[in-house]
Length: 421
Image (tube, rainbow, N blue to C red; front, side, top):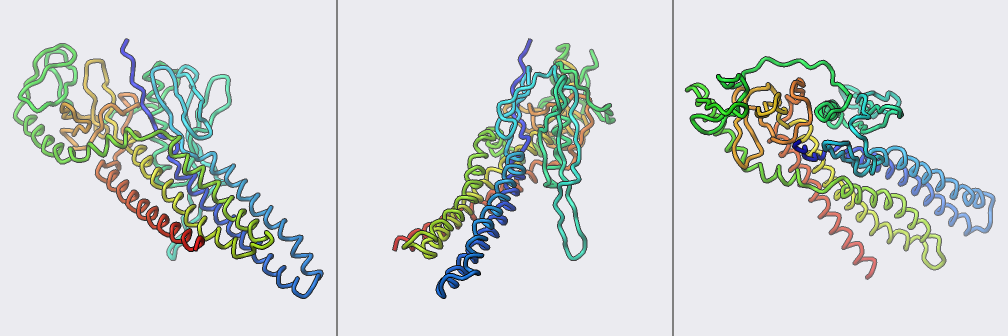
């Protein structure tokens, strides 16, 4: 039996973890500011000798620091850890999780019962503008197993990532069904479409840039009529436009796993707590004072900001990879010997040697070959995915992240030189 290849599917891109670290940074800065103000007031009061007010401020400083840094640590534990970058590797035997809270866990296909999406109404982000108020609630993807409690696979408050949870669910259920698991998808609806068929056996055949092709099921020769030949020429012209994108697609598919994206996220989480805590500690050392604390902040803050831009760079890559794997894959063949079909309409694809992008003859949708995990009859839900838009968004995010990273590196270097001088 042919062994099915292992496919890596991003469950958590790390964008939610980066957002959680942003709010953690705000909490930490507020705590540090309150403590610094307390120290300033204390030093002013001590100039007039010991006073009740000075003792009161002295007792409040440790409490404020503990409260602020404790809240930041709790936020990192609850939000950051659960939304760290996570991959799922799919092969013919099991699901394997890499990175994140589920890292190291493996689940055989035969143990999977269902995969569902729920909304946690207690966790949300509310955005107010001059015209309206928008509330985004937390969506969660759960996997139910036999003789075991459900496992949380992915969650997000980001509207873009939430939109792909349905695709992820469908991919996991389709992969389970195709690999002999017991989970079943929702009742699928086959969309009406046009498919080139072999006159001898009725099987679907792929379109190629030739006057005829061989049926993959019975080997009979299938000749293309003039209308089909014109459709093939039109799809081939469109396919040549996408050839320049294939190198970028291959880089996305070959990018490092979730553990690489988690390294800058983990370092950023550490720096958010360590830099202000160290600056506060240095400022109370005898002979150092506030000048030493400010010098540490002048170097540490832009350095931590640069790490945040580095993490954003990894997140942008993973978001593009998620859009490719969850939304751009051609549908699996309906039967052995048949070619894959269009992800959007189920139609015939123009398949070219050594190219990963296939163009549909009927709806002109771009499809990536070898990525789909869904069952053959699953109704397409990826109408809004466009290859050019995915890569353009990824390039825009990369440019902003690289520009921010370079700016932070320059500011950190200048601050370090100034401190040394």
